[in-house]
Each structure stands twice: as structure tokens, then as C-alpha cells.
Length: 300
Image 1 (cartoon, rainbow, N blue to C red):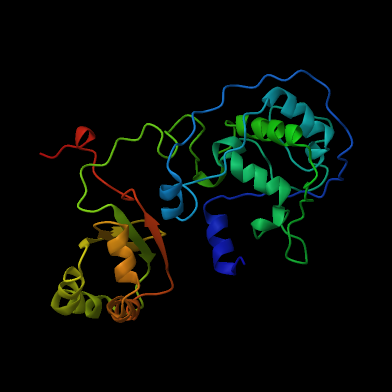
Image 2 (cartoon, rainbow, N blue to C red):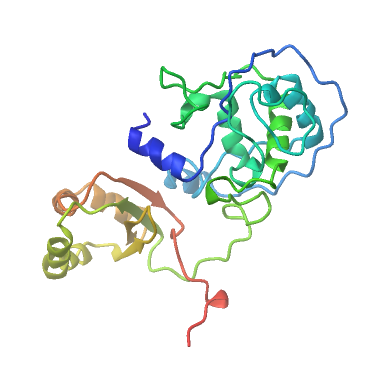
């Protein structure tokens, strides 16, 4: 369920649906040869590591198969998308007859997986504002769950190719190939004191910081570090408008983390910790979520 706060945050970082009220016509095929680029190398990990990371690799995002942007432009036109969406520099007839978000430069702001969701399930994220949502609060974009996969991948490739001409909301998304995808070519972590990391991201309850720090300094640290198999606790502050605290509990191995989580001690310490913080979740990972890269670091 998307709360108003979540919607406002999404709007603030420029997550724009392909909202339009153009007519659906899934029966118009686009007959043309396709030219598809190479598939990026796969992420490789064991089934145990996949399950330990919560069922998906750390920092996972949906990765559509490569598409043909040239054919995708023809698909975009055949489905009537230009009647709702303006793309500057394109010669589509009757662009923007119906109010919908301009798509100029959208490929520089959203990953391909976001376009896939916007086309198949436009109500997954609904942006507040004229042209995005109707009177019922739902997206004005029709869903295309029956769009053939070949058309979907190609139109997504076309949208992803639109990387110039519009600095939407002052946000830029990483382009395919611009940064190494999860686990592909990332520097390996340094030797770790443990193999299992339980990660919590949270906000403090108002006025609780001093009390939280005092409890941890005088009681919490000693109680946690007395747990067999817990090798350390590290807490970080994430800066910026979406700032929060992140605490990482590192355990010697899976057996040690399982034993602690099943214990009464974990319940007591967890309840006390939770009394200082707001709603949060827990992610279990075999890779530390953040670690220094000595070969790319330096200090005077």
C-alpha cells in the first residue's frame, strides 16, 4: 500500500509514471527486423546465499532482457503513446493531444525495470499531480498486461535510450553499463570478523537520541557483545533529505545468528532497542552492506 508520504517522497525524487489516457490497441504488430545488444553477464551466487539475502541479491533490481530501441520507437507509435506523451526532437504526429507526462530524457532518470512496471502495472506507484492521477486517485495510464514480451522489451529499450533534452526533477539514474551491477566487478570486501550481517535502517523516535546513546553506552553494548557469536555492532548515519540510521549486527556464522534470534535475550534486547526507534525492517546478508575499498581510499 502506498501512503501519501511515500507518494510525496516518490514525486520528490522524480519517479514518473508513463501516465496517459490514450486508447489501447494490443493487436497492431510492428513488423521489422530486430537488433538486440549483448546480454550483460549474470550475477552468480549460491542458493544458500540467495536465501540468506532475503530471496534476492543485495541491491537487486528487475533487469529486462535487451531490446531493440529502433523497433521500440515503432512500437511506441503503434500503441498510440505519442498522443499522450511528448518526446522532444521526435516527429510523431499529433503529440500530446491528451495530457500526460513528457518523456523527453526519461531514460536518464529511471532504470529499465521501472518502465516495465509502469507499463504492466501503472498503479504500483501513482504520482500525485495533474496528468498522473485521475479523480479516483489511480493512474490515468492504461495497463498493458497482455503486451507481447517482444514489444515490451523493445519499447523499454526505446524509453531507456531517451537520455537527453530534459533535466527532470534534477535527478539522474545510473544508465545500464555506467556502473557495475550488483556483485559484478565490485571490489571484494576485506576480511570480516563474521559471515552474517543483520542490517536495520530506522529513524529515531523524537527526543530519544540522548537516552538511546546512554543506554547503549552503559548497558546495551556490554549486553550485546556478551552474546556468543556476535562479533560486532556498527551504526552509521545516512545524510541527506532521506537521512536515517543504519545498524549492522555481525555474527560469526549462520548458526550463531540463528541461536541469538531464537533466544529470550534477543527478545529483551530487541524490545529495548525498538523502544528508541520507529518502524523498521531487518535484512540478512552474507555481504557487508558497506565496506571500505583500500585501493580506492586515501587519507592525509
